[in-house]
Length: 80
Image (cartoon, rainbow, N blue to C red; front, side, top):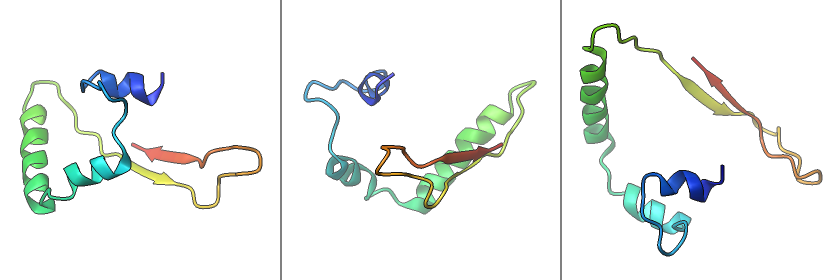
């Protein structure tokens, strides 16, 4: 599925995918401390559900794993 198809599930995209500048304009003003507080409350509300389990995840992009000459993107690693 393309990035457009994925984003279209959440946003109306009459002008196509927003630019990186637009995303920066939207996310830059968010206060990280306030976001963390809200995110934690949201996670706690989910964890309180019977049978819910919390799984920690971590993601990294492996440095130097891309190959421009062969058109290969960098490798991404997700741990749960």
